[in-house]
Length: 180
Length: 176
Image 1 (cartoon, rainbow over the protein chains, first blue to last red):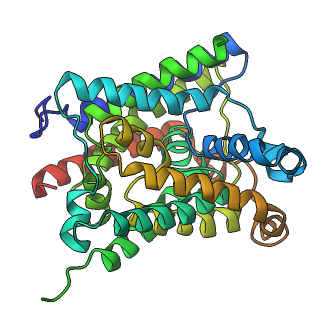
Image 2 (image 1 turned 180 degrees about the vertical axis):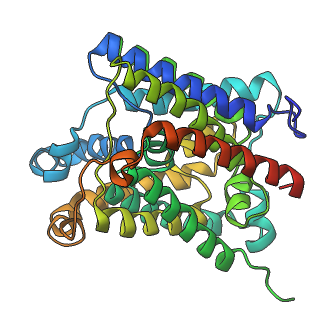
């Protein structure tokens, strides 16, 4: 196992293990500094972002919506994590020149061609379905996958199995090569 | 910016840095795992889980931190998990990696991000309906695997670790 990957990044084992350390430090830090331990997650922030945007046009609607009231439309710890992920990835990609402006993922292009419109529609619709699912399940691969399994949560194991199981099934259908 | 925000921001920067260095932000890596061709994201996730699990279970045993299980709500996890898996396959990003992909210049991730924000808004509108249907089927509550199986966590953690190491060995042998 080399510490470098073939594309100039770090070994996924090394980078992943360091995320494990980060998760431990993060639960400890939130417990001791904020009084309540928080585990890494991402998808609730999309609810808060939706609420913040909707608030600008329909504040009463957001204020009375049961789900927004439950999740609270605020910029919290996890919201800052999402902003941080963007910044951290930006910095990391500058340090090894792996930053690259890309309008269509190469693997998508191989299957569906170079149309940005097609990619946009796929990603947009996929995003809607995925987020409805993540909110229903109360977590995504970060909250259920990483944090759930680290804590030995039953919900984490079942959710991650569903994510990958159905993901494998659908990816097999969507990206199957066209006979040409 | 209060302590909460600074703590979140710093944690996020470190998380984003490691996600990028591990090269797991790419569409190709996520779809590659679902096509069973490139196991980079599984190597990354499982490494994080094993290390995090040992530290978190130890700290919880020592009473330093509290565990926070998400509820094992049957309909929520099965139906929600399936919907997420389907959307994830087409989108090629998960919520956390989408913003990271944007950070490393893959600006098409913006379509996925906008879709997910719309999806969250849709869920907020449909919540009362889901609450009385899918979410109301059966809720086993916030349970951990040790209680559910009646097995000590110090049996599960070593077994899980050994299984993961075996999986890694297999990935490397197969060149995945």
